[in-house]
Length: 213
Image (cartoon, rainbow, N blue to C red):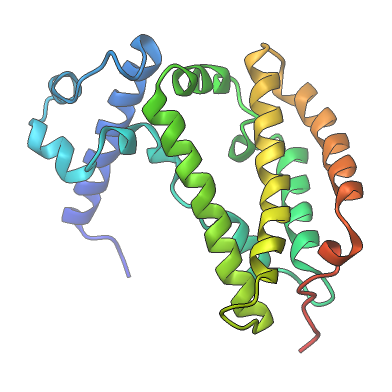
């Protein structure tokens, strides 16, 4: 269904407010910028900003949409004969090899992370997002394996698989903060993924294998 004029204008306004806010956050830090200043710079009302973004943190993490169900999508899209962990490892390798912004391999990512480290509320939101990723993955594994509601195994497996993703993202952020180039970090991140795969037990690597239809 084609996007209507009203919907397109709303999407463009939302994106513009987000872009303006991001520029201010990167220039001055998250805590130093107020919603009123963002509204003034974007030439909209404060109420308009809140209509699109209920919280200030939503403005900063606007580009992180789709992150919380990211691992779940990887698992649901696994091929026949592929396990949940193998699917996530494959997808992450593909993104790292492509030097993708989705894993932080982009010039300027260091600026983004410096803003996060300088604002306790952003660090708290990032932690909360990591918990959502884990919980979404646990629910997906429970559905995909038909595990009972009280079975702890999907949660334990989700923790192991989430660890791979979180460790990769944390390592890339650290290296980018050191001023390294995305392509250089990409090559070393592939080695890191291999090492993390070796640390995963066979039970994790063979969990939730998709059967052929």
